[in-house]
Amino acid sequence: MKFAMIGAGAMGLRYGILLQEAGNDVTFIDTWQPHIDKIREQGGVYVMRDHENRHLVDIKLETPETYDDDPDMFIFFTKQMQLADYLERCAHFFKPKHYAFTCMNGMGHIEKLQQYFDDDKIIGGTALIATVLPGPGEVDFMGKPGAGKMNMCPLNEKPDAMCKQLYNELEKGHMNPTLTDDFMGTLMTKVIFNSVINTICTMFEIQMGEFGNFSGFDQMARQLIDEAYDICARADIHLVSSRKEEMIALERNTRIDMPLHYPSMYQDMTNDRPTEVDYINGYIAKLGEKYGYNAPTHKFVTQAVHLAEYHRQNEKKMREQQEPKETIAI
Ligand code: NAD
Image (cartoon, rainbow, N blue to C red):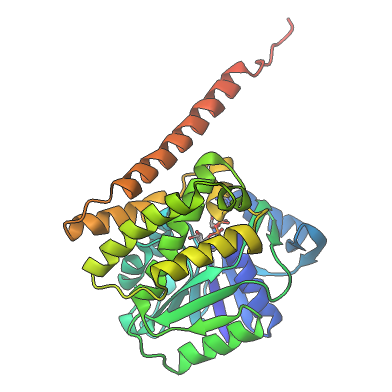
């Protein structure tokens, strides 16, 4: 298949490179200039797995303004707050026949994709696949080859030939896809999962195992899950896991599967970038309001993450002010 990856960050590179290795024609489209410059200068992307085996992989890289091709499918891996700008800049090469696939975290992206793609050509999903972008031009695939898994579902819940072809290519790329039959349920189950781990570990800047093994983990996780599940029940969203299964998945992920990992949101915090919390806990709280349900814990966590962002910005400003200014000897 011919793919264009919109967003060549951690996940765009992981999906794109694995699809390329599975024999597909892949082009990456990105806008972060230091990353673009580095990839061009070194003749590709340095790929590692669990910090080891650093090697150069040749990729085709374009910007929204230079891309001029006709793929079968666009795969979107931007941060939620970057998507509107990417879509606007890329709109000139979207055609009615094109498919859009994404496994971005949070919610808000589907409505934006619907402005550019037909509903029967949008495929959503979720990825339990950890990837880090240590800096421009390099990517670190966390976990052994074949580790991690993902869910995918077409927006109209009717998988067509293109959706099945995508599934096959993802399987060949060892991404362990599962085709589910409930679009909103699939996406919201992951949003709720992230609303516990990503946000709490990010605001305290701790590894997932530290949270999972904390004596208050069960109570904190249960409170967030209960609010979110109550809201989804009111919104008639059929989650793909029960509350109990979601708790077990959280315990397993933090204590057994990834105790030494930081969630992807943590990378934004430590790079002084805005987090996606408004599209995760914030989205759940807003959905609650729509259905007359107050979600104080999700509202509180949203603001607590913003406070952590604000604190880091202030610390950064103070560090910059304290740095000795260059003096000119005359
Ligand atoms: P990313 O931040 O690595 O990349 C997204 C975009 O931001 C790319 O265009 C990239 O070039 C740009 N970018 C990266 N660092 C930047 C910087 N310092 N300054 C300016 N621009 C920068 O994002 P990602 O981790 O690939 O995530 C994409 C989506 O997938 C998000 O919704 C995320 O929550 C989700 N996701 C991520 C992971 C993961 O492990 N990384 C796992 C599951 C889902």
